[in-house]
Length: 392
Ligand code: PLP
Image (cartoon, rainbow, N blue to C red):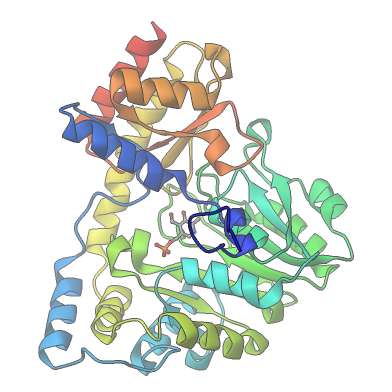
């Protein structure tokens, strides 16, 4: 028998897996740097701050104590208790330690909750523009991705009537993200209330991705988890990654409704086994320790945000709303005559400025660019200067 291929076949679902363009743009930017180009990095979604010293010290001490082996898949009791309190207190909730699971970042909660809830033909509502992993995981699970448009003219808020019109008897899961990546928008209490009323009329699972909940500028970030009528169906996700500048540590946590706890734990046992115990000790220190490093980081982000927004709005054909959370400026470039993708490409190739096109975040923001201000101010200013030169 003759085979007309040079390797065994792959599973058909593999082609459905999407990606995060941030990683791909970063790889291209690094290649340019190796070729001698001075690249300004405004593409990366991670704080440019070191992990706080007391957090590193806690990991070090745990390693020296010998906490370097396997540990319980749902997490060590101390971190489950600390995370329960950390999630509950600002939202006015009571969360028991047993309700909380620990995973290697927020991502496994997104991916495995989708795998646990969604089957072929099930519909999943998710924000568009939004974190690209949502759509990727929905498609991998065989579900039907149903984008919920977030429009610039509406301040990137969810339109509750539109949300209601997108709900169907097949809606199995609804994903919401506030503060939002890439828009930086924070859902207001009124918006959340209207969304909660729509969700109350469904029997869908709800995934509240709140990994930027502590990176806020002068606003509160109300949580969907505070609606008692929805509590039983909400997976409330947060992570050490952004708040504590711990992206590489891989430690996330979530309050998980009872029926999902066993399946999610099984997914962890089948994949990663556990989060390293010394990482979990570091996370306990992060969640329960002093907050000055976080406060300082957020204050720095706020100062940068103000510069970025003012400078973007001064560019011809560019307009930028003021983000209220996270560390991204999501600007409308439709007035430049370019699409976001064209501009992102030209910025990288011609000016050595790495940013992300709005199209990396869905179908509804082709004419936008995401600019991460997780970079030193002089570098941000250099990048925006080059952006201006490209448009001149
Ligand atoms: N959710 C959103 C909205 C994000 O922007 C990110 C990271 O960029 C994540 C989840 C993943 O976070 P983690 O590093 O905890 O897996």
